[in-house]
Length: 259
Image (cartoon, rainbow, N blue to C red):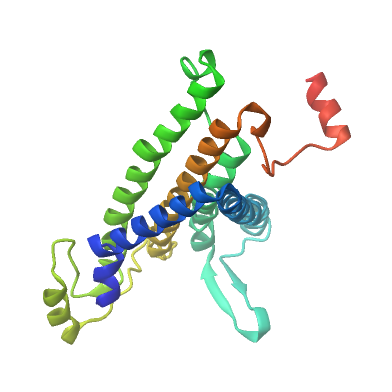
């Protein structure tokens, strides 16, 4: 119950914000520290995104297997047993579980897409302003939009998760003392309700992914703010400095150029 309370508390936000201010102060003192933070945070976003992007391939392959087993071999269930531990579920369970891969891509590849510049942008004003104005807009956007939205979503998602994992159900308005009183009767009550009787029933995982999404967006907001500030201070030559962007191969570039 202490974890439940402090995970969505003002105290937790205060600690995170204090660490952000401390790191920012060090970065203002020595720019190489701020550049190091940018490289670490963007590298973390790229690493997570590149790994979980493979969920798209797994999703396609699993869908193909399901279609073949269902339409051709008339199989009603699939048993998956690594290391002798059998995990058997109805075919409809595996079909509905495909949504989990899509959720992984959305939640865990969001900052990777942002770093790579693959997100959708509407540059009606942004594209027409000067280099320095763009950096100022980026700094303001990370502080005014990205961080607050990530924090607010985290606060709602945190209790949304725990209300489907334990009983008695905690509330965002509960004080620590009240939660400690509830702790005497606390027990696991993991949500296992599916949309169909034999369908996918681990929807609490989606709530965990929502928290991961908020954490990644908040960290990327810090990295984006630091990068925008450093590019503003150091000028246009520093634009894209240390940016680890994926590139197409020679053959793929030629294909893209002809289409």
